Image 1: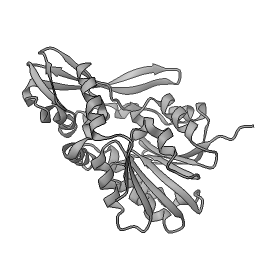
Image 2: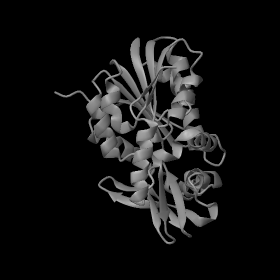
Image 3: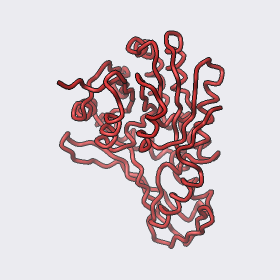
Length: 313
């Protein structure tokens, strides 16, 4: 398997140590290693946490319609690829009519390996890339336009929307396409969303990296809130996460041993936004994107949208 590491394991571990010393724990570290990969896939496939499964269903239903908009030859790049199941759905449709190269991108080297195994039997050119979304300018050096850039599995909601769309817009040409999905906010479902994020599997997913690094499970408590955030586009919701240390505990990180004292708070700056459909469209139009085609789940709780840069002049 062809794999390019724009970020090495040693680099990611050293960066994590810096975060720990600042009393922070970044979300990327949740997915690292065999345990992180297993925990995420268990959560991703669970009946308690249905975000991924419902978005995967929406993609499966509409993949043939998406294929109509693609050139005969193109590259497909998926950021935050996970196990590659969603990308496999797309590729099974697209490979029938297109000459393509597939780049599976994730910050977890183990996830990249799994994504490549998912399409190992397909007669397409494929390369794994270990990288952050922030590395998009470097990833762009690998692909040839036209490109279908994908951000699937609700990944769109895990970034500041202005930063994300500005970053993507800067790397795309006018014949490129940007595809993403997201779970939509409906006020009457806010309680259901909160309950899902407080599921036992999601709590374990967030706590396990600390436990694997030496924390007793009873020495810390994971907290999560879904809070309103006032913006110029109205009220959106954003998760806030943190770990409360109950007893003195040591965490190993690389060759370092870091002591957390009882009462300390470890900020987990990763988040998930929840938007309404009009808010998603407004962010797109603000940053120079136009809709090519939009798909909604029957109850309008999930959105899948294909976009491109709005022509200027």
